[in-house]
Image (cartoon, rainbow, N blue to C red; front, top):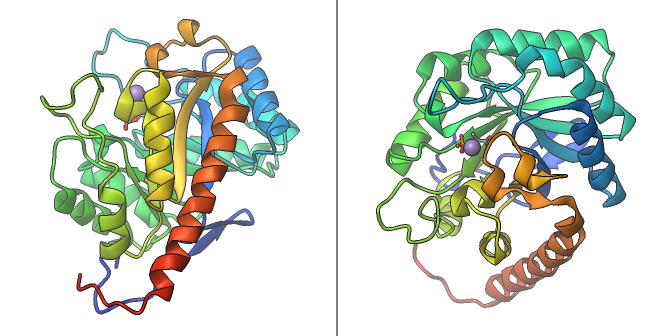
Length: 291
Ligand code: PEP
Ligand code: MN
């Protein structure tokens, strides 16, 4: 069960040697939408230069309009996986919008004897696509990065995750990405970073956060909300980057240039240390605060 009942122990799983739990922090920077091999290569090069071994790469894109770029789909998998291996990547977060895409990804990983694997992303628009949730739940090859629904309650998103679990796969990261709201000010979505400590209390699975879709434009706020998320105990960050942000085919406004990655990571590292120090402080105080 995702819901933490009766102080059930925190849930932890490994994927390709990487641990995902409420004690870990894994960073998934990368392309929102794969556009060409050159940009995939440049992105993996930058990630590898920064000692990263996870990434995001969108092949199948769920778009609001059918007239917008829909992602390259299956066509780009051969070079995405080949380049991931060349750059020692271990886990690539990749959204799926249909059950058949799980097989396409599996077949390409197998064909290439890939050392890198994939974490299947369920996008916010599919947060209650119960057939898709059951399909990702029926397989145990890949873990799941579940994006909360942007227009439904937190409980409804948590209940939807139970569809995945009820089919047999509990390897889920529950990822926040902001809520559709008239009250979000200058942000694309209402930044739901305050739900991180709440979810740490309510659920056993690791908690992710997507600053790019929360803020929706690349500015200092991406750094600020990422910092808040990590200090609050986020376990995974999903961040859009691009070698030429203005040329990105999807969500170009929110992509971080590759040259800013090092500074971003240094900032995250400061915040992770603060999270650890705060955990020690709170654990060492013998004051019981009722939940
Ligand atoms: C994405 O991360 O590529 C994406 C489409 O996000 P969301 O489903 O949160 O809008
Ligand atoms: Mn998007």
